[in-house]
Image (cartoon, rainbow, N blue to C red; front, side, top):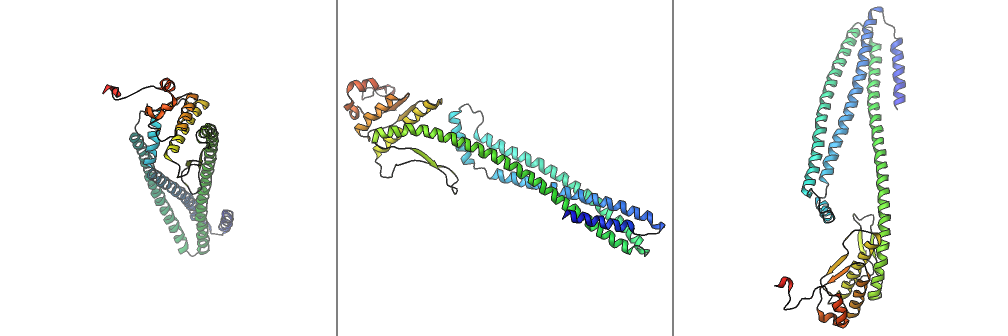
Length: 343
């Protein structure tokens, strides 16, 4: 399309250049040509400024939308989780959120100031264009009144229309090129992010496999059933869904607690296996619902791992283990006469 317009412009310019005028009109014609060139440059400049205005307005809208789309509750939970492992975080969540909001606000204010300057520039260019168009019209009117430039005016109007069309096409082409470049950058960034996600998921899957090695082993020893930790994410889901395979809704309370214990012991074995510097102990409040056979197996598993399994239990519940075993594995013994904090 642009090539066709350029061809038509060349054709009209040839017609105008070959147009025969008397010597008295050559000076006026030269003035018209200069004004025509000025009009073309001003039209192109206005199109470029309009493009910048449009892009900056779009940037303001995107910044405002991205700020409004922040799920503060989700980020708060994430920040609270991070604070557990990084207790020395110096900034509170509200400080971080306020800092982000202020940063977005500053960006918007900066762009709005720049946008205001662009609009002022655009108004000045439009004034110059209107002035040039008026000068051109006045010159043509003066020549037209002489009765010699009717044909030239028609050609001039056509050329002016073509030049304006060219300016619009060039501005659109520039916008397309800039948008294409932005899309290429976004595509490259997306590929990098997808690559990182794939690497993280691959690493996570390897760790899940290591964890399930212990989890299935311990649950097998407890109940002759192998349980595994797994996850899934459907295209329609926003988040990943994690689950313990083969646990049904009719599992008894004792069996559930046994599986929780197997899960926690498997996690201790996992962090030892992969070398994570995490706490190597678990605290359980009760095992009264667990069958005696599973309690003995559970304690045996706890003694095999490099970690601590701490549980509060009535002595009568585990007396079948024998006094020697109980005494060897008891950390604290409480009764009516020996209470917490000697109360």
